[in-house]
Every structure is written in structure tokens, then in C-alpha cells.
Image 1 (cartoon, rainbow, N blue to C red):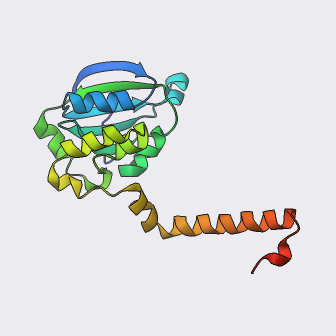
Image 2: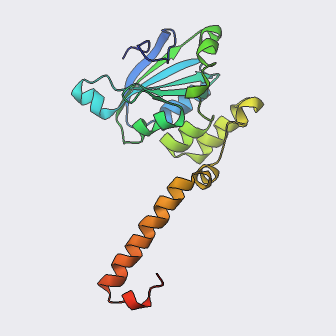
Image 3: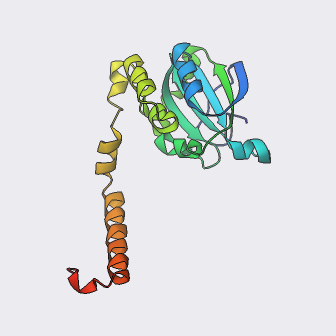
Length: 185
């Protein structure tokens, strides 16, 4: 995958440190945190590996802490870009190191920013890794953090959709069990 493309997301090409296939993202995220990588990681999901596509998600890091996420297939950045990696692995993973000044230029792009622990929460489902990432994050980046519950509660449309689905399910069950007269409409 070419990181530099027609999209607004651009980072210089770094020095390749590692390229391998992994079964899930947690080991990669932990390794990046442990080595305090400043650079980026390119995740190519299973479908891209088998189909030869150019789908990939890029995460940038500053001293091991995630800063930006970009999904080339959907041209989405930020937390939405992580959705492409929700599927189970395997992934081809490439770790690149960048000079801190080069990555700092890319990190000025606020549109692709992710809260520091979001990749660990979302991709690895590893609370310990998420906590280690928060601990490693600079104080000014912790303001980006918002718990999953807070994020969910702030999404009024999503809550309303869940309520509507629950009402429809209750209505269907009531009809199925012959209890439609018991419902308040």
C-alpha cells in the first residue's frame, strides 16, 4: 500500500522495521507501545491479503502512543477508520519508523486524530493495554479520551435507533404471543 496518495492524509515514507502476518492487532499495538515507536503501522486486513486489494488502515504513533488513523478503502480518518479493522485477522502488518519532525507534520491534521487508547479498546479489546497506553500518553492528549459509554450516550441518533428497534421487537413478540392488548401504544 502506498501511504502517500490523492487523499489529504499524507505521511512521508518511513524506514521499514518489520513486515509480517499476525492473527490479531493486540500484539502489534503492545509491541509499538513497548518500543515507543514514532512512525506508523500499516494494517492490511485478511480480505486485502487474499484478494490482492489495496485496502489498508494506517495508524501513526508518537513514542508508542496512537495519534492518527486513516482507512484507505473508505477514505475515512479518526475513530471511523478503525471500523475497517474490526473484522478478525489475519493482517499483514508493516511497522515503519519516522523522524519525529516528519511525523509531527502529519500529526497537525486534527481530522484523523484518535484518542490514545481507542485502538487498544476497539481493536485489541484489551483493557490492560488500553490503560498502559493512557499512562504513556502525554497529558494534553488525554483530553482526546472519551469513554465508550460517554461516546455512546452523546450519540442521540444511535440511542433513538436502538429504542425504535426495541419497540419494534417488543411489538413483534407481543403479536407472536397474543399480548397486543397488553401494550401501551
